[in-house]
Structure formats: C-alpha cells, structure tokens
Image 1 (cartoon, one colour):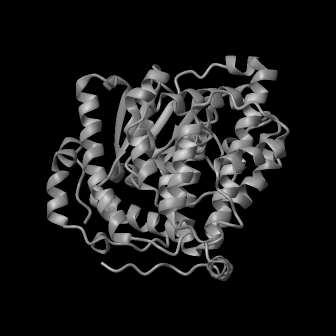
Image 2 (spheres, one colour):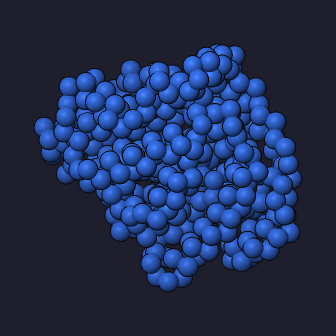
Length: 413
C-alpha cells in the first residue's frame, strides 16, 4: 500500500534541502559521534563522572545505526543531537547529585503501579486516570527530562522546567502538525518510562523515532536489568523531596515483565488489551509519521510488517512468561480497552477494589471531571485504517487468535 506522508512544517523541508545541498544531509555540520556528544555534555555541565560504563555500548550501537540506517535529514539530525546531548548532560548531573547527596537514593519506592499493554490500547488513558488519585505520584515529562535538582512538593507545579520541557516536546507537533491528533505530549502531563530509560541510552523511544533495526535487535537480545536499576534510582531521586505512590506507564514494559518484577518485586502491573489489528493500523501510521519528522525516507510497508510480526512474538512471549511462573500472576491485572472506554470510572473502581484501596470522594470527583472533559473536548484527528498496512488481515488474525481468545478481546476491524 502506498502511504502519503502528512504535511511537514516549511522550515523542516527547507532544512532538509539545505542538508542535501551540503552533499551529506548535514553530517559535516551536526556530529552524532559518541566522542563528540560526550565531550559536549562534559563541557556544558563541567562534569566528568559518568558512573558505570554500561550505557556506552547502547550509545555506540544507536549512533552507528542512526548514521548507517536512519538516513536523517538536517532537521532530524539537529533533533537527534539535541536530544542525545540533553540526555547525556542529565546523566552527568544525576551521577554528580548521587555523589554529593547519596541519601536521595535511600528514598523508598514501594509497591509502584505500572500500566502497560500494546501500544494504542488505552495505556495513556488509564495512566492519566490513575494519576488523578491525590495520593498518586505520576512522573511528568519535565521531571524525567530535567530531573536535577529533584522537584520540591511545594513548588513542583510552578517549576520553570515545565515550560522548557513543553517547548522541547511540542516541537514535534510543529514539525508535523498531524502528530498532535495521534498522541499528546506536554511538559506537564504524566509521561512514559521510555524517557527514564534514555539515561542508559537503551529505550524504545529511539526505535519509534528512527529507522534503526540494528539497534532494535541489539536491545531485543540484551539484558535490560541495568535499565530498570537506573529507573529505580531515578524514581528515588524524584521522590526524595516529592513523595507519593508511584503510578508509571510504558508499553515497552510488556516485553520485560520478568525484569520489571526482579527490580520491583512488590509492583502491581495493569495490562491493557485491544484488538491487535487495530493496534497495528494505528501504530504503523504513528511510527511512519515520527520517522517522517526526521527523514525523507519512510518505508511504511516495512514498519507494518515488522509490527505485525512483532505483536505475534510479543504476545506469545508474554503469555509464556505468565504461564511459566516467571511473572507473579497474582500481581497482574488485565483491562480490556472496550471496558475502559465504555466506563473509565468503573474500571478504576474495579482495580481499586482488587487492591483494597478506597476511591475517595475527591478522587472520584477528579475522575468524573476528567471523563466529562474528555468526552466534551477530546477529539482525535488520527485517521488510519488496517487496510493501509497492506497486511493479510485473515492470516494475521489467525496468528493472534490465541491472544484474543485468552483475554476475550473483541475484533474491531
């Protein structure tokens, strides 16, 4: 199937032309060499201690993949350089903070709640609902992207880093305005753990933004325990002056449930479920659009094929982990997307009932106000179809039949 990219901002196309005119798409202007990135982060922070060296391998694999596979245009290179340098500077600042104030790492991270599931299956909606609990502590984007110094409970809502992170993330909406209707990212909104994993340079964030198959394969076969170890240290840091019951979210947790529970043995995990064919259609369009932000070369059909195969493998792997005892089944709850959107408040109430927690009057009021606002003012501009993927509907449906039957997931397409 042919894919028509959505319009990009004029300045993105102009920068792409400028990069092509240089003959190298801007490689001579914007370096993505690890040595240059590390040196720049050290120069801007005045710091040199990187902590453990585990991150250096995924950083090298990532930058090699970007250079040899992603085919970034100049605007894409600028974003990649800015993002990587910010993350590396943040890593230096975190290591420095832990050296000067090791007590922040003693902050307890007890019984965190993780929302995960197939992408586009309601994880964001459920995460935002659970984050409305006055006792909840959901990480906002600005906290994960600018964590030093740790936020103060009394001033977090007015922290100037909110505006900085908001400008950084909404640049994506300006590059391709259609992305706004696909996924909302704002500096002040609860965000995904992919931004926390970025400090180890190993995160699904990059596999979404860029066409980097070698980096994807490297992560698929690697040990993710160091990612989760840093994840806990970051949560402890952020909670040291602003405590609460952590409520977290990322579809990428679904592929690492044994590792997640090894790091957080007292975690509660909620898995959302939706028709995987509907998921493939939506994710393919969104990932193609993200790639289009950063490159003039987008293979929509290849993205669809990879996602189709990936979902089959992923859900078989998850079921195997849950059946084998590698995952504590009594600490996992399943939520169907159809039930969630039909009655969001009842879904939360059911979870809280299982957890022996009270939906307080204040929490209920926030839930009802959120749902009312969402129904009244939330309109998605994301227009996509499974047929646009070019995949064989019946063949893929059969491959995913066990998943749908196991979790009673209705077909939507």
